[in-house]
Length: 371
Image 1: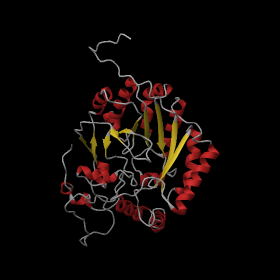
Image 2: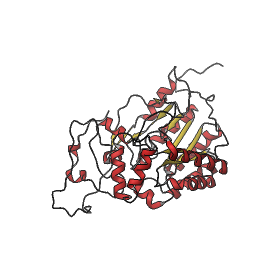
Image 3: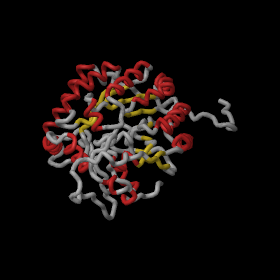
Image 4: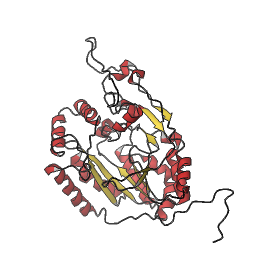
């Protein structure tokens, strides 16, 4: 594990709640596990305007000394049993990311820490190979991108996701990928041959088609046009690809659902999905701060509709409802999604991944089988 780092390690000026170029969160609040918290206050000498002279927050990457890499899941509303997250934290900085509170387990803030203090699992490919060779391993599709994005910007340098795909390809273990990065195109040379064997499928998340909103809401993710271009490139290579209009945020991007699905279909997507905004734990405060800064005229309306769709609360973690919400507004969103998919012929083909091809490749020195 990484060492715990207290908020005191961050200079006071970096704690000041204010928008920062290329970052999603406004603040860096203490996590729910911290015994104490510190809050930056205006002493009366500032103008109240953001300070343009503050140094930019740098991205730092630390090594995670994990001993296992495959995570198992038994949640009834998540369509996978096994997953791998190559990184903890995500430089994309999406303000709505439900994974932000998980950074608190590392002693970091779910705010700015989540997008600047990253942890990389450099040994993931080697660990994965060992786990796939275990006698009790039962082949199932492995999902990448279930918590943080496997193709976030630091993947360009560290190539951990690519290393994982190379292992899965050699073992012929099926994989599913969810990302909002066009960097996934880099690995078409691995994914296309896997797809021909029924071993790979990819989904691109497109939250909005509005480039300005995307820049403020998910500052370091690929632009919406680049994500659509990635769908086109993957589809052209014969890789089953889907489009996710997620998360849908009431009165902010929900009106774009049909347009996102339509453009995804035009780019080559055959699958589609959506989720309703989730605000667990510290994310409630972080998202409200972001709304008040970037969409103040809509903030009250957005939060009111969220409560109407969560039984009066900002979030409920009930299985079966946490992904789609409840109440009239949430039901209308579900109906709109179904009608759009029917109109566009999305989700009419069932892409079943093939687990029967799984076969650990021989290692140097292994005795060859007679039959």
